[in-house]
Length: 181
Image (cartoon, rainbow, N blue to C red; front, side, top):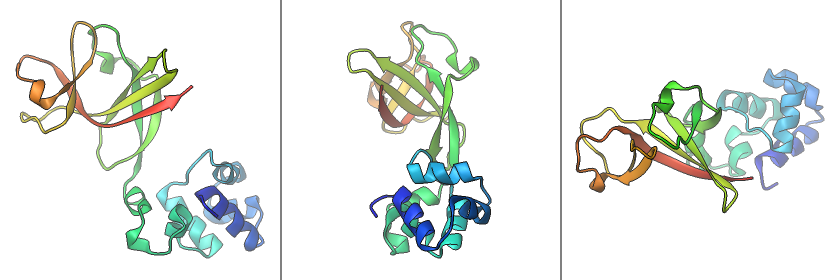
């Protein structure tokens, strides 16, 4: 059992539970259990604890396959809420994209509030890249990359390259991910 979905399914079968029975014990619908077992959804922290209780296993084992609670890389994941961050299309010109409606949302495990993402599609590689940003509000620049305004649309600049105090800074990039189409 090398992943969350197989650990949930195998544990459910070993306990003699149907998907509907596990759903009832965990307080969710049967299609939700099916989504966990086929890997299209990951249970949230509170639900993961109910699943573990219903299956007689540790929630940390379901996530990581490891019984050592404090040593698991999944520990950090379960300690942060899942927030659904608004994702905006990477604008091609300077305008206040944050005032337009998002093109979608992405689940992201974080304690930070007000994060947002910008998505740009690269035709050459057929990938979409999402940059997750923490809105800029502090007077001091921390090390890292920042999303700034320019006449050609948002650009990424390192803190060391932001010498002009007149630049509009949207936020500091805290994570980036790519999706293949």
